Length: 407
Ligand SMILES: Nc1ncnc2c1ncn2[C@@H]1O[C@H](COP(=O)(O)OP(=O)(O)OP(=O)(O)O)[C@@H](O)[C@H]1O
Ligand SMILES: [Mg+2]
Image (cartoon, rainbow, N blue to C red; front, side, top):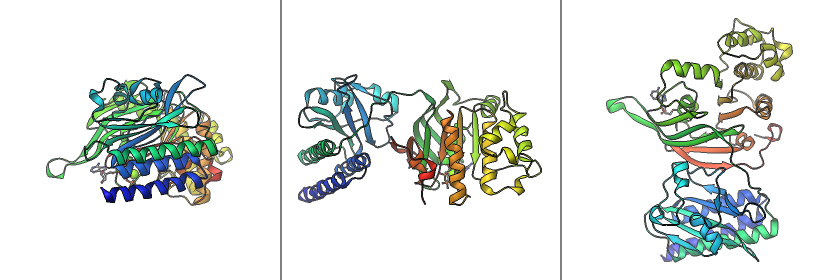
């Protein structure tokens, strides 16, 4: 116990430093929350803010852990967090599921299972502005006084930092999920060689967003992308696109889905060497129901002048732009990109990312797997996969533009 308290003092110092020195208070809040979650041995944590001048609801603005709370909110007084905001009192709950205040719809929507919780109000000079919630103590014990004190310190330091520096988060409304994965597992092989790669992935991809997926090599990013792209089938769980369930779709249904709904970009451009840029696009156009005009697609990626060039006559960046144009041919709602810049140098990567930036601006949803943390700065949301599940979801309120990236 004595050790734990010394440790907690260090955490408080660290949080103080983070919040005082922060260039970006948003990053500092997220990092501080992560420090507390780690120090008390919890699974997840959320900072909620009260929209006092608007709809009087509370919004999860920062969170750590696998539950994706994007676009959700609670009425003041609803759920445990809502109650803490309404009453302004610290609350510790051993078993949320059997607590009468518990808002079970959150677990239902995210696939997360909440067990224990500690929730502390965030109070500035005048009023309750939100709360901090720490969820599921991993060792199964109840949060003790030292845990509560640490969380109250975070709440106090957070309120001070916000008073000093200001924090303009806005309260964003929920966007429609175009793709949803719930409890998705994927097992390869059989008998002794059986390995489970995905272990219950929960993920929503929202209309018009740019979502980046990070995670160590071999953690299952491409496997997940292949399932979303209809190129492989999940083992258990559900996968829906635009409300339609493709979890157990037959080959024919998946082929039609691949042809018309999603565009693909890979690390390898996979252009046919004997066809010009335009012919490479027209070839794909033949296969889809309502293709874009090939020249228009090439113009969208800035290669109108290069339509009669063969792949060998173009740089890697240009070839990748042709492959983006090829993905655009289907007028897809969603583009799936698996490490599209991995084979390119810095400058050509920026060239390709600038084109993708335009594609997103035009309203296409983009899901990109990358190992490049710098590229993640462009995304609206970043998810990190670990141990076969989505381990972290970060909302980026101020995405960078391609031209600002440096590596
Ligand atoms: N068809 C398959 N049969 C057997 N094992 C497979 C198959 N496809 C993938 N795997 C295994 O699943 C694991 C995850 O692979 P995946 O390609 O999804 O990883 P990744 O996260 O994309 O990695 P990287 O960052 O290196 O691309 C790996 O161990 C891989 O060997
Ligand atoms: Mg991969």
